[in-house]
Image (cartoon, rainbow, N blue to C red; front, side, top):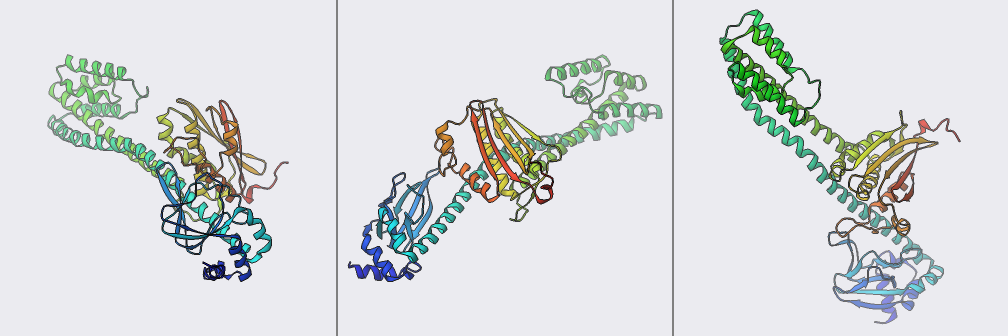
Length: 471
């Protein structure tokens, strides 16, 4: 293909073709026509980009391994430009650029880019806009991928957290049906006993003792067994059904209270009274367990809703960091428990609000705290705190892990850099943190020694809290 024909083809490439013909001729004079077959590598991962590539025809995609196999994160078609662009700091791509069909590219060597900037002003202007657009698309794709990773972690943790209260509700509801039958039979027997007003008063005392909250707190299994044995012995001594001992032992009724009712009611009527009291207390106890479990589920849903900030708009606002950090710790609680890690929260009283995008800040906290949980050993400790310092609200995430080596510290905010094994890290978390912090006008500092790593995030105060700042 002759040079004039190549220039003619460049003029047909949309925005790029709007450049002066003389500048397109410069491209042809300094470039080389390359024909790629499907599957050919345009630029390889980790290898310095040879130059700029203008697609005359075909289709090219970049594939990155984010821990779950190769994934196409961006693509270019006829008329697009990829590779090295003016003023770009890119040295090597994060993944292989592959031809997805038979593709023709005009390749301009890397060493010619500087000359192009000085000699082809309009073309350079077009290409700078392309670079900005590419950076924006890449950032959007990376943030989307990291959100999916966070969503996966959130879903796994939430499923684990919801399983316990859901199982408690199912178990208590199944027992409730049986206990209601017992309570109904006991009520009929109690009605047939025709008790006097004095006896009914004594029964009410037992009922109140059953419903009272235990003063000694939660009994150990051994203490609970001893209590049940004592009630069983008391029932056996009086020829009563020992089967109700387990139900009575779960209440706060005392042997003294049982003696008082036995002094007022005797024989079959006493057994009916005790069965009625035990069944009633058991039903109420099961209802309380169901209510507590339902409140736990409601609390988890509320924490997740606050974490995702799914009912709010996309504008910067005054952020309650106490609530923001608490919600984040709640949704990561199952991961902390799986490693027996203690996570502490410490907030300055009357902590002022900071200005930011709540959903983005929650994603920042999730990444920092999740990384801290990964770093600490079994039984370690992660401390999260927030306080006002001058014109900022400062959030600190501190862990007692092994620390960050100097060579890792220099690169940890780079895209796709990770020290985690394959399938355990995308290398996007801290890069996303860096980008989101910039969007929230926040600063981050890292200080790490063996046994103590601190990420310090400084957020600007809201306008209503900036007055009277001490210097």
